[in-house]
Image: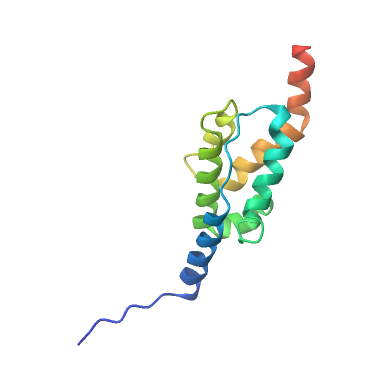
Length: 122
């Protein structure tokens, strides 16, 4: 008798989501504050409509979808590895937590941290 292979609905959806994400590449980010808003917008657009955008904004969704969360982490790590903010992403390498890596980047650039750093350097 032959073997039957089946794919669960979740696996089929994940495969389709991966294909959508591959169509939109996450650009490299140097870590420059001047590039942040443009890179952030492009990154959000790349994830938007693929299902992965939920990882960026919803910690519960990220926790409940570890495979997708790891993909987002990997995309952010690759995009920042040659830049000055890779340390923000790399701190979540053990968990491969894309949501927390994204929150760290947003907190750094959109939060008080960057303003404190800028004012100190001025």
